[in-house]
Image (cartoon, rainbow, N blue to C red):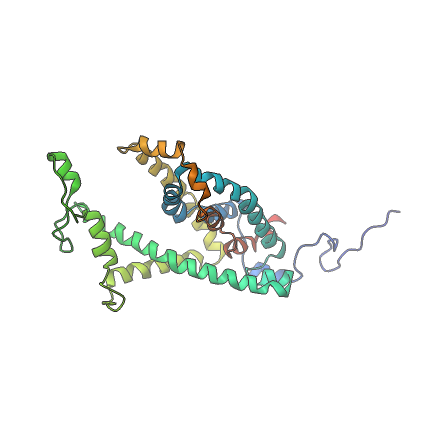
Length: 306
């Protein structure tokens, strides 16, 4: 008779291949994805976000256009993808969160888990403000005339000039120190920039309510764990891709779009020698590397795969 490897009497699996924690009941209490698509959409939603739509084009413009893709792709294949799959494997193998997964591997690495919590917390505080600004813009867009399209508002100054209307009517040379209504709406209506840090000003309830609404929306997206998150990601993970397509179509139809495309096709290769290129940071941030959400999404995959 052939000798069989000893089996773990707790679950019947070979001990060498058993990656399931002994406390099975603890995993079930934390919830699990209903199907594999929810997990895939959740990870896809973490990869694409405000950083892609908002910051990535700016980084390309500042770092030589298409030349930025050279270090970007290098870091993507040498650092981004390998470390991303490493964290994915750790989350699936340990079926734990960002702190306890490292503690389970080695108590010496527990500090890495706490460091990721600090990073995620700071990113949440940062991006929730941007979401509040988006809600504020959305609420102000339900008007016949957009408030940032004209200079006939209480926050506008004498330097405000509607450049588009000027260009459509007659030739005109703009004087010095002129601003557009878009900039004045951003600086004087949204940010309400004060003269200095010693003039904090008062609490603006409209922005505070937008911030509160953003936190409430985030809470209800995750308040039941993966059970509620799994339903939300069907929208939050697919909608950004739809918006990217819409923005691309809108961008290529704007005046001067050909010049922008040419800027990417004929890059400034001299910027490759610039040590301040942020391609590596963009890779880590875009793929949510060294962050807890990857572990969060994978802690329930173990039961799903089984």
